[in-house]
Length: 133
Image (cartoon, rainbow, N blue to C red; front, side, top):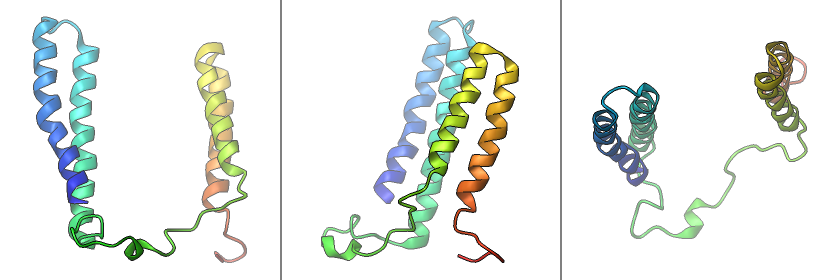
């Protein structure tokens, strides 16, 4: 993960001067692009920092070593629900919420309510009874 972290941390040194050049070229009158580039600097710092600290915590992966073999990454990666309908509910709720920007603010509240239902359903999909998994 060290390579990934340095790629994202390198974005700080790329996007920060670009933001200054952008601000200078627009005579500091156009704030949306400047703030977007500065937020991109922050995003690069957050993702790069997370990957850097995760790399320090878990140590080198087989991808990071020159003598790494493919079979070293074999096994379970995580628990994924193959027949879950909750992502569809959540995506539909997000679509309804964004539709509210075009139709009216009251539609956004319907989408927000459905989004909460979809998110809670997806998070607690495998919880039955007393927090069983």
